[in-house]
Image 1 (cartoon, rainbow, N blue to C red):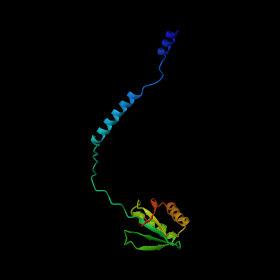
Image 2 (cartoon, one colour):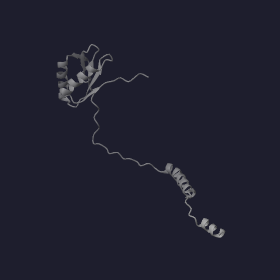
Image 3 (cartoon, one colour):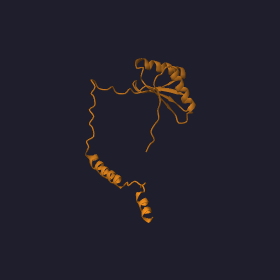
Image 4 (spheres, rainbow, N blue to C red):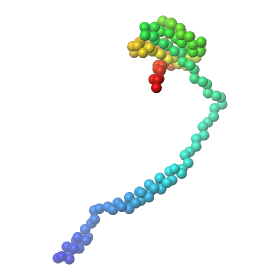
Length: 143
């Protein structure tokens, strides 16, 4: 019986996988990719050309809100001087400026002490009166 028990042990199925050959193949592929990657030439892009030079961006009209909630408008195209206006005059001035250039942007520059609510009121006033491009102006921090 000892011979029979030896046969059963030798015919038993092995339930393990030998992963050493897979690791060897993976390391060889890794080395191949590491060697060939720096040698590949990245694709060159040929950009299309345009018939005429691009137009320079238009300087935006600045609406300034002072700490006392007073408003002023500055147009860099026209001598760049600030002009104090009321809320009603603001809409009229901006409509007149945008008749010549309807896509001209308008930026709101508010004093640091101005409440956020006052900025939103001016922004809402401009959007209600079909001023298309409205943004906020911020100064970068000094290094």
